[in-house]
Image 1 (cartoon, one colour):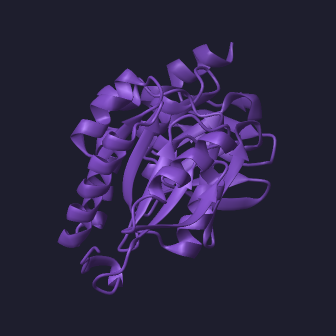
Image 2: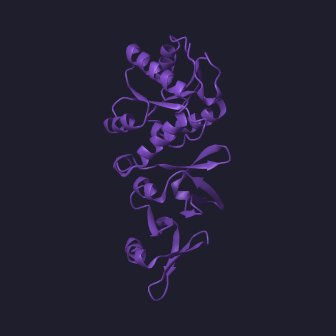
Image 3: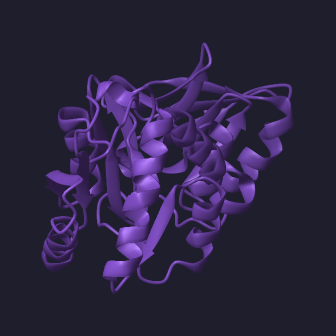
Length: 265
């Protein structure tokens, strides 16, 4: 049995595992293989990334097995949102993501290639147990976030289809078409949507690399504007002011004004 000291788990308790995969057979097969290890207890599963984040918050597993390709939020995006003392150890599951494997070797504990093999999974379980005994999953989670946000990897990750934001204790996925403005304030990045402001776990620089090309424009150091949300624009003496459809007015910096005008033509 494992003898973990981190995350408040009692000594000699089994590893609490969460499985996230949008394919039912894949979830069932991994659960079956993990069930062969007496030191592992599968405490829950999720059919997508958003559900995985919710289940992590509810169940506080020691380890999360995350499929890379899920329809709402990829395993990479889920990993980005795991932080704090309750962050589980992350093991990625993938069929072919060669670029992702480079990231895993930098900061993730391990990755499993599909189809899964018993011997390889047993090696992963041993690694997870050894890592759990160190009591350092939170530090590894932060290192993984930094690796995924680094320019070489962020540029090669697929564009966001929806924007993950924090709302109370859950993660919501906002339709990008409904987000007119993303901005930073007091060192926080916020997204406005239908009169509300939501906390975003990306830097503006990372968002520029991850948002669909052409949909948003950087208007100054602290704001990205949805091009389709602009109702009108004008200004004098080189000062460009954008009026958004929700009534918000945003002033572009002098340095950014020429590029913004070009994008709006």
